[in-house]
Length: 328
Image (tube, rainbow, N blue to C red; front, side, top):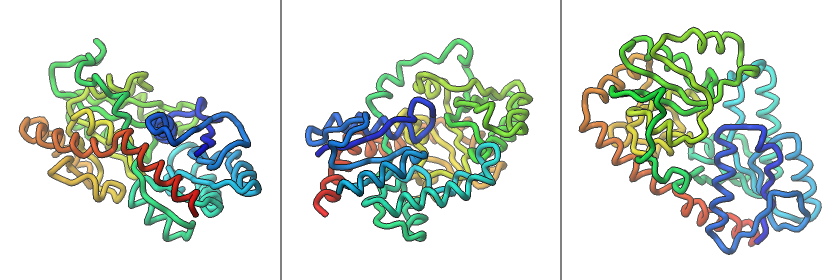
């Protein structure tokens, strides 16, 4: 089977969509049955879209005219477009309708969690299945041998996050928890989007207390995980959350917000802690700092969970999706 897997805008973006698309292509290499290209071509059986930019609609129409199958990864349902970048309250609803239009034109929509699947099914966008984004276990190999940079090396427990810096990701919660614990280092790795974020957001980052750091994008994410002893992920809206899977694979105890995207695979008290309020986030950070046995338990169980989301699993799942689409 031949798959056209466009990456035309990939070099211009960062974040979970890019990571997922790259992981899919690495997974393809593990399955002989799948032959793929990222270059424009007319010689393919399936168009698989991850990036739903302006080129998506003409690619879908072209594929349909030629009798090709179309698979679309729903990395966003559209609900998480608002309250992200500047003016997103204006263009967010437009983007949401645009996404739904593309979903309805596809032969198969892939949601990355049961939560996003349920949202899409409510909007009648067609056939939707759930497949995890997965975790690039090859890329994370040696995570336990990486030394954090001298700048962030600390003998005390350090709290980290790895995510793009948007208000929806819970910047306010991260800051408030950090401010309440001035003796503890808090580090949020991820691009700041200086020109795209509202000025109020950038001002928050620039005026954060001395124990809270926003160093920006990190080339080797293993360094972020090596730096941290606790992974604090206060995002208010996710479809899945790849960095949570990555932190789990790297055996860091995680604290997440209790949102629907994490239901069914993250279990409070077993492989994570789930908080609803800023006070709960603070309480759970302190609880983990003072309880090594709990840190070890959550880390071990999270790693076992993450091992079910490896590249091998992604490869098998995508192959099965393609087979079913072509057989229909």
